Image (tube, rainbow, N blue to C red; front, side):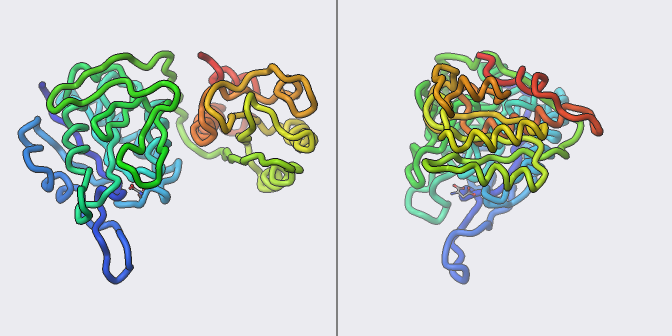
Length: 330
Ligand code: ASP
C-alpha cells in the first residue's frame, strides 16, 4: 500500500452519542475523535482527516453532495492520496454514494461507510466498518470500481447499494445483484466489477428535480403541484414495468407540454420497459416523451436527472433527448 487515505467525515450515527438532554442519539464526535477511536487504524496507512460536516444524513442535500464531490475530485488529483473514505449517516448514504459515483471520474477508490449502532450502544459497528473502509481505500484492487459502500464486511457498488432495514447491521444490500466483494480481515476480495459507469459534472447546480411517488387512485395532482412550483424535471416512481394509473396521464401530458423532463423509475427491482400498451402503460408514456429510468431507484434517478439537467448551460432549456441519453443505457 502506498500513499495516504483521506478520511472525510460528514456525520451520521457513526459520529453520534446518546444525548441525555435530547433523549436520543445526536451528533457528538468530530472527525479526529472518530478516527482516533478506532484502535490500530493508524497502522493501516497514513491518514489525513477532513471534517466536512457533522450532519445526520437526512439533512444532506444535493448541494452538500456537490460540494463534497468537488472536494473529492480536487483532493484525488494529489499524487500523495491513494483513496478517500467518507463517513456518513446510513439513511441517505446510498444517495451520496451514487452522486459521487456519477461525479468523480478518478480511478482512485472512494469508499463510503457508516454505523447502525453508535459508539456507546452495545455492539458498535462503526469502528470495524471504518477500519474496513480505510483498508479498501488504500488497496490497489479497489481502483476503478467507482464509489463503494463498505459496510458489514461487504463491498457494494454505489449504483446498486440500498439501505434495506431500519436497524439491522446487515442493512446494506445490492438487491438482485449482490455485493461485488468482501473484506476478510485485511484482505480485500472482489468477485465482480461495476460496468458502464458514467460521469456527469455540471459546472453548477441550479435547476431543480423533484420526485413523486405514484399511488393507487392517483389523480396526478401532485405532478401539477410540482409544475406550479417551477420544477425543471420530475422523477415519477411507478409500478412494475413503469405503469401508472390512467388518471395520471393527463398531468404527465401537461408537464411534458410545459417542457418539464420526466423520468420514470419503478418501485420494484428490475427495469422499466415499454411492454404494456394500455392507458397508463409505459408504451403510451414513452410516446408522450417520458424517459425510462432503467433499473435505478427513484431517489438515485432523481439525482442523475438533477445532474443531467444542470449540464445544459444557464439560460438554455434542457432538451429531453440530451437528458434521455444518460438513462436506460445498460
Ligand atoms: N440512522 C442514521 C445513521 O445510521 C442516521 C443518519 O443517517 O444520519 O447514521
